Length: 411
Figure (tube, rainbow, N blue to C red):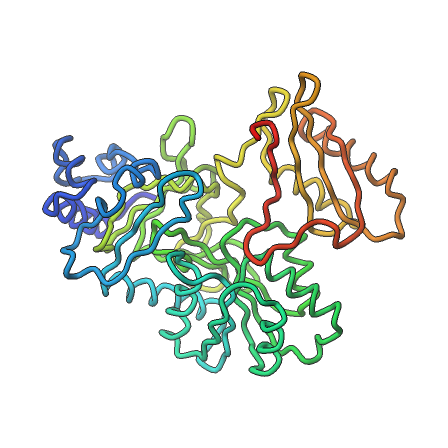
């Protein structure tokens, strides 16, 4: 999907703002002699933005609007280095709220709903993004924030929440607690808006069945406003994204060349109207593809497929490149195991070892199931893992994101 003339003009407006402000990227564009682009081909020659650049600009090097117009900052976690600081103007905050409100509307959520928000508040963009959109929609917000499952369930019952916003990990934990306590008949939830981590079909079905609700994938990242730049619609898995606010490309992560619609690759995003910290051709490292076909819902907004994983999720084991999504696909073929799994990679006696932990109930033969899973994984990725079958509930649950891959080779 080539960039349109209208989108090109918006990009040129952002390039001018960057240069005029003398911000981090403005200096880069000026040094490279870039002041505007006149065609889709010229746009595709623009340099990429990288997370490492954003860290280099710490703390406020990305600020492009005058400081007097900056009303808020948000930040990435900074767990692997300096955090990324993203400044927002009042218009940026309002634009984000509009996009998020569209997400709720796309999911069939209205101002009659009561929306319980469990993601974290603060520098992280999650909780406050869910709240902004809900308030723009005119719905009742129950801003719980993360954790305190006892209170979450109490408020869910007392307030008769109809929508739950959560990570898939916490949605599963809540669903299991509701089932364990036998209070499903007291819960009025009808929809769930899930974001912040990739999740597979098995987990989706597990949560949906336990809670009896429709589930929606929401997409976004701190560098590009936050969650709310895309969501799937009823009965469809691909996600609509708001191309009046962002331009989205799919590139080959190796050659860095744009890929045709329908081919899997890395998502690259350009913000078209962002004032506080515009980003041009930002590499997200998320893997997806553009769906060229029109959606059955009738919306004209373009779509991307579900997020398959990240380019930096790849594990190199015994010389083989392995993605967690490949393991998850194999595990989804076994009806006797739950959606939860854990992969541990070790280096023992001079060689790499992969251990996969899965959960099942006590009615199956653990040894036979373990052998079947190991054989199926080998046929898919080329080597045999060690598979350990455990009782349901043994693997850790999380109120935030679940860490499913633990690489012990570098500990």
